[in-house]
Image (tube, rainbow, N blue to C red; front, top):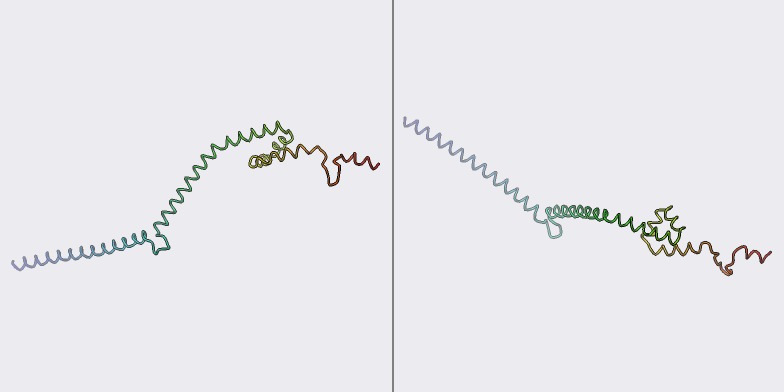
Length: 158
């Protein structure tokens, strides 16, 4: 009976030792895996050298850049919505003012919307166009000419 109790206690101690050994192996494997994960995490955060940024910094910069682009797009869209009616109103006011000054120019602006856009971007061209339209019906002086009409110049040769 003593032999069986001793044998039983040896079996129990052996089982406890095996369980302890298995737990120790699992713990060592777990610690080594956690150490590898920690090293990977540190290498992700730390730069490789002084000239290259860390991968975390690259990811962060990319996310911030995308966020700024999205924010800028939203703001520009809101500004565009507010600017369109103002631009239309300004366009109509300029067209009305030009139609009062020169009906020919007003007709040209209605016929050619791209011309209206050019005048809206470059207001100095409006005065130039008005001066050119004003001199369209008048005879032009050529080099050495008196400025008289072609018909009156022909009369002196007949």
